[in-house]
Amino acid sequence: MASALKNLSIYDESNLPSAEKMNIGIVVSEWNEKITHALYDGCYEALTKHGAKEANIHTIQVPGTFELPIGARLLLGKQKLDAVICIGCVIQGETKHNEYINLSVAQGLTSLSLMSGTPCIFGVLTPNDEQQALDRAGGKYGNKGVEAAVTAIRMAALKGNTEKQQGKIGFLS
Image (cartoon, rainbow, N blue to C red):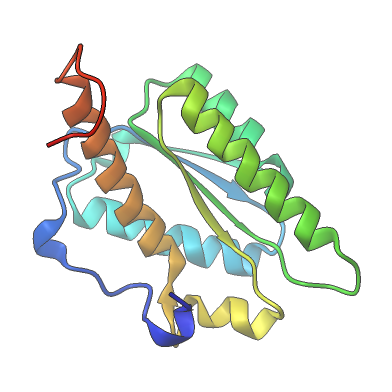
């Protein structure tokens, strides 16, 4: 669903598990830091709002969005994490750099998630211009950082629930 039709910060809190016992990693791109730091703030606040302990939230910064997958991999090698949230922003420019970066990061995070068994959340804005980014980093469409935190909590809980069902394969009932 297009974010123009939805506030990214609105969700059903009653369906969200507690993050009290979760260890969550956050990797933040320094590029477009005005935007990425606003996304990080929304993400961090949402995690702590739902019980995550500050000591169990592990944050690192990488130079740009392209480096998010390796940052996530390095963080996974250093900490036992239930999920990793990757926050970045690639604004459309005069060249196709955004297409290459966004696709590479999405593929990298998908591969890392599948190989590690730890959900790596794509919290990357891909707007056409800076105003669209600001609108999604705490502006009129909410904060995608909140959405990424909610996704991480849900996926970490799912991971925990499925690990308890060892030996089963196929669809969960």
